[in-house]
Length: 178
Image (cartoon, rainbow, N blue to C red; front, side, top):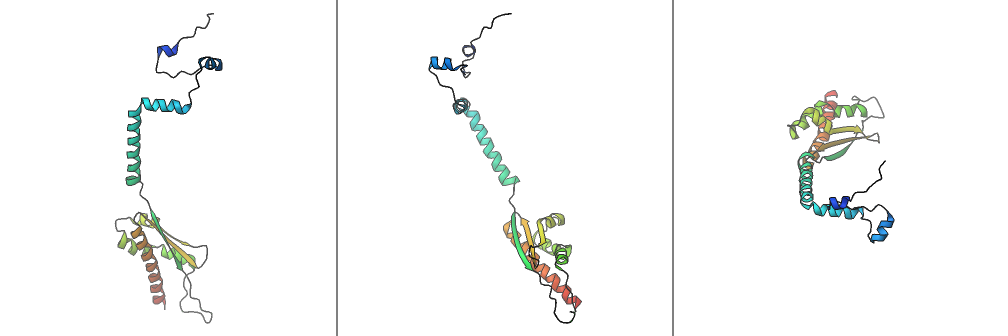
């Protein structure tokens, strides 16, 4: 066996950070332990050109992602009050659909297609139907209509026309039946 002989690493590589091995060596030298912040600051000062290039590249990448790839969607919501018009007296001539059937009718192509063709003709039927939500509200007499679109003006126009088209569809069915 050989005895351990320490090597002077600091003398061999002068830019290496010296970490004291024992508290007695610190007390004798009168030095303080380097903090993590001091170590990072000294490394950043050594490589300031690289840090500047990295920061600029990060800002450019984040700007590109936010402005080009991630498009915000605006949601427009409206409520339709659905009253089926049941009479209390004799049996009415026209029996309107229940609220669940009304929601299915509002989701149908007969109602969605004219609105899609008017406002977003470049969008596919599938994509348009995914952006439109028609569902029964927690209160049973309301139907919630919602539209997601990157342009808030188009979203508002689509939601408004969708509700108008639904009302027109129900009025046409009522008129044909009567």
